[in-house]
Amino acid sequence: MPIKPKVDIDVLLYMFQEYEKGVSFQYLIDTLQLDINVNTLYPKYKYYKTHGIETLLTQKQYNRYSKELKLKVVNEYLNSNQSTQDLAIKYNIRSSTQVKNWIKMYTVGKEIKNQSPKTGVYIMKARKTTFEERVTIVEYYLNHKQSYREVAEHFNISYGQIYQWVQKYQAHGKNGLVDGRGKGKPKSMMTPEEQKEAEIQALKAQNRLLEMENDVLKKFQALEREMIQRENKSRHTKRSKR
Image: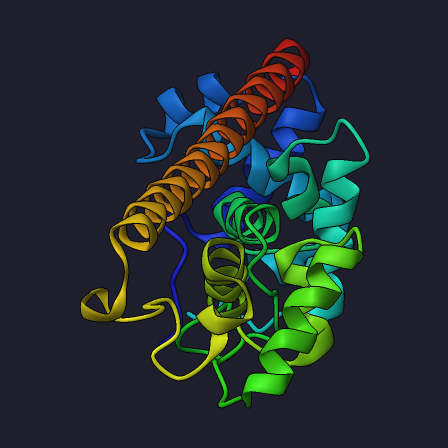
């Protein structure tokens, strides 16, 4: 379903022409009694100046963006001081929120894939593996300086699979990767010393999991702070131009 703009295209074009003559957007909004604010109007002007009148026309509800474009935008954000709004305008992406979502997905290791009209960004699906495959994959992760995301992509498995296997391997060794993996020897077959050791290893594994979850949370919080700082700086710069 197409999305209609709140303000008529002819009105927008008139406002842009007046703005370029030196009239402020706020004055035009007040004079014309429009249901729009400056923070919404100014990006529209930037889209118009960058991509032409076509970008002001009725938009489709869902826009498809290729994996290559998403990665390009994410990498440009990480390697520059541009805000998500700046990048959305530069690449004619419907909103800065989409850019933020791609950055967050990439940061926590979720694979950015080609977008469908329904769900946007996907995580690679889990697949069945043999014991030998699991051992090979875990040892590859431990012996190479790569992230869970990179290893998951290399072996065509899900992020969650490699994460769980590594945790169980570190807690139980290769035995943790067999069917029923992670359970180890039944307690009824363990000596008191083995039971105590198993409990210690389980606690260690739980602590490692909590530490990793905490690291992810900290990474998200740092990313949110950085985004807010860039957006505020960008707004301040743009406001001084209006």
